[in-house]
Amino acid sequence: MTAESVTTPQPSPAAQAPPTVRASLSPSRAADFKTCPLLYRFRSIDRLPERTTIEQARGTLVHAVLERLFDLPATGRTPEAAGDLVAPQWDRLVTEQPELAGIFDGAEPAGPVEFLRSAAGLLQGYFAVEDPTRLEPAERESLISAVVDEELLIRGYLDRLDVAPDGALRVVDYKTGGAPREAFEARALFQLKFYALVLWRTRGVVPRVLRLLYLRDAEVLDYTPDADELVRFERTVVALWRAIEQATARQDFRPRPSRLCDWCSHQALCPSFGGTPPPFPVAAASADPLRDSRSTPVAPGADE
Ligand code: SF4
Image (cartoon, rainbow, N blue to C red; front, side, top):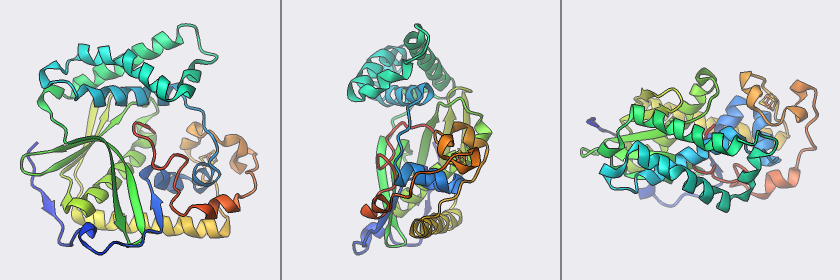
């Protein structure tokens, strides 16, 4: 990666007096509110359970394998080695999160075998677009955070961060989902800009590249942000948070139907689908101002 780093003219908040953090926001929860305020409420305030789908579990597994792949010596990062990691990583995930074993309930008897086979297939897509023997990531599944507007903590897990010898940053996000890309691409770019903003505010460097790796299609989407864009994006994030605060104070989270409703777990409670939301959980909404999701921040590998 050769790139010209763009430095911010402003000091990093880390160098300033400790701010009074009043709230936190992850890219997934911010994107929820942007997509549909009622979806944000269901997930972040009501904290309604959502059953893990086979597709989400496959995404978590593939992320885990790609993270561990870089533990191997560079010459050992082969497709075969990645394939060999699939079953052990799935066993580890199920041990740590026993509920994952339930994703095969009601599935065909060959479900688990097919599941592992399809995860291996996604990894082949990875090797079609990158050669991991030529990469040494600076960070993997890393939690990053920054404070903006003096009181809002923004944070999330990035899949991978590459740092070039000249200091240029490349943020990489693996996408494993089978949903139509156009339905989720804006959300994915929002997430990457969120990470870019955090990195800019904490390191004083605008990432040179934001990269989406679509493993199913074996395609790469690169995006190059600039400082002016991140200034505007920061305003957008702060405005989103203020809108969330207003909606919470008014207990007013309205549904915003879109094609993303097809992937929503809460249609039965949504007025747009004839449902009725539960009473607003006032205590939960005011109990923890740093809450922003059911499992704050969103777990690494959660591929939406
Ligand atoms: S079904 Fe659609 S409109 Fe209703 S809460 Fe879910 S995303 Fe929002």
